[in-house]
Image (cartoon, helix red, strand yellow):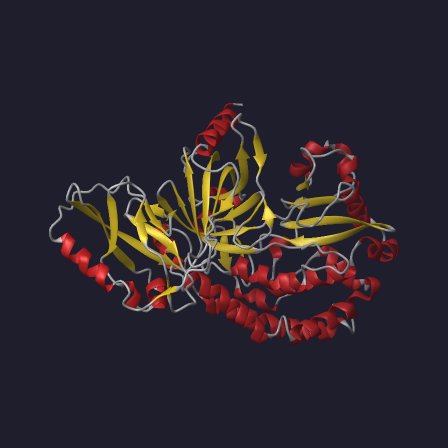
Length: 541
């Protein structure tokens, strides 16, 4: 009760500084690009001023703005962050200002004559002069031009201690867009299982509005080009030394497995990289993900969505032995879109699946194609085999039961796919619970459900999966296309300058940046699977 009261007070406090609804700032038209040398005159003026001014201006209260928007700042280093389009050679038009009266801002270096891509990739700091003409004082501060979006959070909480908190949030896209910031109040809590042990935390953040009378409402917004949602996942990307595995895998799944015939829903997620700053402290590289929820999968009130969170043995008799409130600890399962744990009736679909897995072969062969969507099943089996996603066999999987004419149909949706391409789990905190196992590249990934489907050739699954693999290898999963997707992910984290900044901020996390390990594993894995898919049509080993 105390936590909820404190949370509401924080929300009300920050709602006073922000709109009661999220809104992107709007300018009338797209800004142009600065010409090289456009700031030469301002730099000359700044260099002249600094020789006559006393550098005694305190920086604690400086609020640096660009095109009228206050920027996020790391107060410990007096460094402000401005997101730009790192793929454009031109510098975005606009000027720096200070929101307090009496303070002026001038660049001390004409960055328009510098190579933009180099400045961004190297994290080069550009100095600015902030000066008070009346008091003849000044201060030198720095700006970093990042190639990623930036998120600024303000809260009364201490994120190294508090697991539930509230405050205000601003999302900054690249500043060359007409609409480039989004502001909202929020409530949040820590999330993750083993990752809770890490100093860099992950969060689930809910966008809200607060009325003058203190009524809290959801505030669904499109964040960074993703779908409208009021709830967002902030993934800390702590243990993956490349920082690209999740993003790479999500992009691949979205290209071939997230669309289901007959449904406009997206059976997956999207992820965008950002750099996070909280209460004036740089917190590093994060991935923001769309939640996989009833809205994402268009689950109606007559349909059901479950998540396998922990690896537990699934036995149908357990549904009777314990209450739904205990299913998470006993079965490792939770239900989404229902208050609390739902009722026993809400669990009938998943129990039907569990009972199917317990049936004799003859009945299993007849009933499995009626419950499972065979196209979805083949895709997710191929996907998990490809990435060697053993962490998604017994957990990190969503089960969506969609109502169709003849009953319910089950669709499987992957989640949290960082343990892949050779990275596997090890029960050692010092290793951040992750170890690289290259020998897995030519090993079959066992999955009891899939193995049974294939050994019994349920619904002709062997030929279907082999044909599907051959087709995907011609385009979506061709070596050339996967390399292109991988390069795109590497480009975002490396050429934005964010990888190096995250490594400096979190030196105890993994930052090997060894992308050749992924490439080597991928190449060996695809050779192994190409041969394997040829064999499964003949028989099952």
